[in-house]
Length: 53
Length: 484
Image (cartoon, rainbow over all chains, first blue to last red; front, side, top):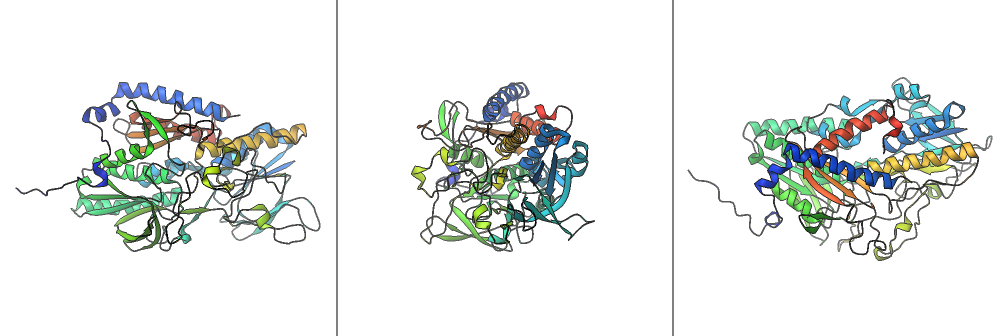
């Protein structure tokens, strides 16, 4: 079976960092994300409170 | 006293709600809006990929305003007479009704205070062939987003038959703004195609007038990430690379024809990109409202900037990028020409862009205009309402409440896929919105308050905000306790 050979080198999309599988799994890990949900809401609230004179 | 609010978007609706709450029954609050609906614009993205129905992002204003005791006219403001007319020196606004029952009727509404929160005019006409009336889609309103979903469904159906499809998403004018909405849309399309296992048949291309990806019209930002201080350029390119999205940057779309978008880049070269489905954000302009003095002479230039946005207490002195300061940005949003006029949200004329202006060798300006997202718009609407209410109640002319975009922060939750268990959202916060290079010489902003993270938590936050802000906008119990 032949497969199309794709070389991404020297293209713009070749250079940025991409997440590892472990990072991708962490992004949808329920417990970790529940913690981030609280942490990020706290960070957002700090900005919101500072934005109101 | 009578306060007239033009527009019922995030800023106008917030201003009207707080004005009525603070002024009570003794004073009148009147809202004029051409649409019968309030729409929660940030969720239009989900309408555009079929994950929400239009009814979930909008509701009828009439019912809410009746409950609050606000007078509502479904109409369009066409002329502003801040000095009144020969017979009466009280200012008024000429309106034309847009409701089915009163379509075409005209009226004039007098006011003691006027809040202009008319939002942007989607200037599709500035780019030939752009928009739902042309050859591209839009997600700028719920009806545009619903139309985009119908077109996207067509592309998905073709892919399910094994046909390849080319998607072009981004900005449709050399000085368009609102890159964030387009960014959300392309990520949601990528997510939906992966969910249907069709990504191998898709060619996704991002086209933008940004100098670098991640500029978002606010000159980009720096975030703490993985032990590094990273520019949003790297963050955005990483997200695109992960989703197999190619990009064309520093490009101003000049013309669209069926299946083909033409653009010019900052180096002066011209190109074109083919597409089967395109969603390109148009240029924004102010609403075309003319202003007249008491004798009927036109004074539009005195009240409005050339782009149609209203002049406020900003410093409009032209300066080079290196001399820009947060002090140029308005604080009270009061018109310098008429003390009882205010402009909030997108309706006020910014003193200058936030991103550095750029020009191609052919003289074409290619850079993003400044964005004004929901949070600053809501905060500005509330601050203006507080100041007007205090002036009416206490009789003074001071502005104890201020909101400067060079001091306030903003949180932007970028949806990257709708699912309660597998969804993704990029949580981005910046403080302040406009970089303050005097206070923060290294990064322009408070690096400890700036966040850029992708994860399921971001999707939960965006969904939570959807329900929270609709709860607030509908005036459900304790709505006033919820922040903007």
